Length: 246
Image (tube, rainbow, N blue to C red; front, side):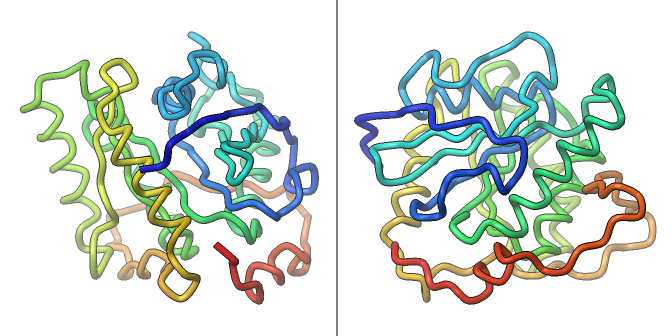
């Protein structure tokens, strides 16, 4: 497990171009608004006020980056699915997330956060589908496990995995966590430690998913401004060619 001795706020970036240099490995955290992402980041770092926790869903609107032990970074991505955010802003936030997830060469793993107290949500299913289809390495993290009975939590996790089981040759890794009790902290830090010590050849993206059945209509869309088109950026080219040193 990673021993965190220092956790420092680096910057808030409105887009990929504003992110820090690509010299350090990064681990990104994302989920529906109000999934408990900021509390989870604080729990992992062992600092109550590292990421700002707000009672207002959708508070995180920028890519917030924290440097850990001066050797790797945690990245707090804007949550998705908050309907009260202005449409124009939502499109901009999603475009920033899209660019980061698909073009950031030093992104090692995405922690996709899901509320363990809820039955499978269409937008969560669609986001997991999007991650797999774009070959973004990720694990699933079910949050707030302290708020429901173990039976209810297990039932929701089982229902979610049943919905996605047909998409994968092998299911992504699944973790349970609670920022209140600390459950899952060692396991998530263990994922980070294992990734940091693995050679590039050992690091494999999530396997591609099978074609979705007709009744599954992805609700999640990374939005691009109407009429815009762009060629592959230098970030994307670097991601395709670069070998990670960690």
